[in-house]
Image 1 (cartoon, helix red, strand yellow):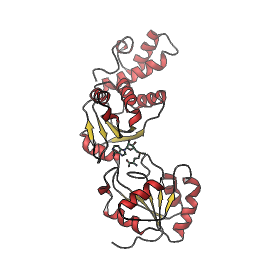
Image 2 (tube, protein in one colour; image 1 turned 90 degrees about the vertical axis):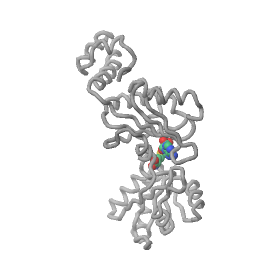
Image 3 (cartoon, rainbow, N blue to C red; image 1 turned 45 degrees about the vertical axis):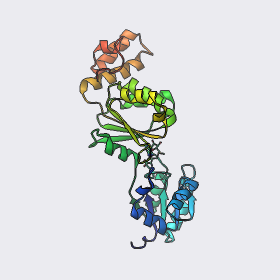
Length: 282
Ligand code: SAM
């Protein structure tokens, strides 16, 4: 392959587990650039050594990205080419890098992608849930109340939803998904993709939660949750009605809150006030 052109920032995807997933071009670019900007230099040094490579590494993470971007721009202007990698997968996808990319582009310099692994896309590609339109939501807020609020704002979304989650929060997150989206919503939990213990669990949020609760191994590792969008207007109205009811009942008597929420959402009043759990029949 030809030598990489001068003055370019390459954004290089690295494996999300299986080292065989670094592309031939990714390898080539990493071996030819003057230096590699890495989220965690120790981690990247280990990855490079697995490929028999050694390179000058520059720490570029969310805390220093904005302030060192201009120095990197100067190096690119001087004719050096650089690569940007994150710990795993595609940089900028729930990872640092957008500020650097923005600065480099604003300086009129070239930014070029070297595509490859991305956990969200890998999960979507095996979930068997409609993938023609989807929303990537990344990580939900860590705090329970903020997480439930975010989920409530997404409950009526008709496109497939893709979330990242870590092992220590997977159980409480699944419980919140069930509360807000209903236990019957179709979903696939993709764990440890491309690694030894790769697992896909489905077919509904309730099925997934019971498997995760029953087996602590299913709580280990890294996760992508793919959730089918809200499928019909009645289910959407019910979800919106419940969201409004929860908000309004802090200020009104429950019966009044239910009446107003029903009027605003189009959901039957009875389904909001004293009815069954959220969206059971969805
Ligand atoms: N930039 C990465 C990408 O392209 O997917 C994502 C980085 S984000 C900080 C890390 C999260 O991605 C993990 O907490 C997990 O939710 C997801 N993830 C990464 N590798 C994974 C894998 N092998 N299997 C399942 N999920 C994974």
